[in-house]
Image 1 (cartoon, rainbow, N blue to C red):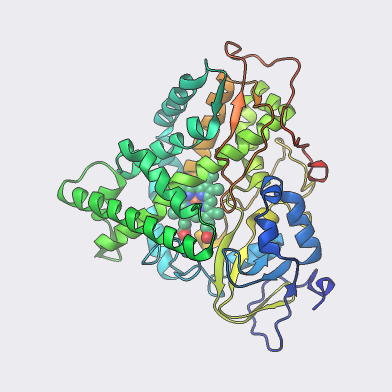
Image 2 (spheres, rainbow, N blue to C red):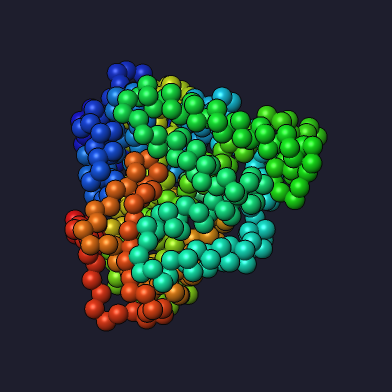
Length: 442
Ligand code: HEM
């Protein structure tokens, strides 16, 4: 099938398909999507992909192997048909030996787990955490404000959500650094080959299980006021969660709670450092921050894609997808698809409706979205109240990690003692500058 034929077809219809595999064999998308320049500046690459092949087939091996779906309506339809696009154990391997709960449980069983977990992360429960979250943000800003420089990732983005989350779950905060190392070992292992990657991920998985087993057993002996102790006495349909269930929930929480908010903060501070006009808007009117968070989640999409397996032969935008194929729903592409969004490539903090897919969609939509939003809003409020005027350190070329878009080295500089002021002449010092429209992005 020619690329043109693939365009403008129907969204997922779930029907069986006969005949030859007609998905577009495009450019080496996996390599291209992992290219450092694309990771730095992904929106134009996603647009090019949608224009040429909204459904793209790449080699089966590798993290993005299989089929990549890039159009907004196809992604939404795919996420809403879990019977066709399963999120089961085989969808993604991240060192786990059993399905992660609830991410790798398909409906109908999935529902019971969400019924148990949703109340823990309800807007009301999360709002109660705000004083502690704000205190943490202030402490971290206090530690650097007089220095005039920091690596934002190490000084703020990593320790802030880790501390919030470890306290909540009941894992020892004193071991935060070690745990952050574990989640990095799963999400971004320093491997050069697929075999090496698998070995490293499995070894790190074993270490995470060992920590979780130790803590879960300790809480079973001596309960505390934390989530793990709560899980141990929780029931689903009259059945107590088993020790393994609790560990499988915690394994997923460990990765979801430690990495995503940190990666989002990196993306947001990098965006604001490179776009002083946008930064000025939120400094002048902090009331805009909640909307700015949503718009930056849309634009940056820190979790660019989610992975599914086709349970049967099906069709996406007119392109057959074979049963058993890995399917990457490219949230980041959907979030800038001009067929859905007005002014898709413009970052507008006053945009009225930002129904983005950064937290996914369908039954597996992010459980922690309210907590994430609270942490992001409070971080931006506290940081900009004290350090309103900052830039990337001269000569910085940002490197976004492939997969989740973290920036391990994010050096920011500012003039100490100018708290609450914005300088008249604002310059960004990076070698690649970003305008606020995708078309002009360097
Ligand atoms: C800005 C930060 C965050 C982003 C961008 C994000 C993104 C996502 C996305 C895209 C999914 C869907 C995965 C899929 O469909 O395969 C998801 C699911 C999930 N997230 Fe988040 N997440 C964030 C923060 C958090 C936090 C703080 C928690 C802590 C509890 C969390 C817990 C989860 C869980 C448990 C799921 C699985 C839900 C299910 O399968 O029913 N997330 N997240």
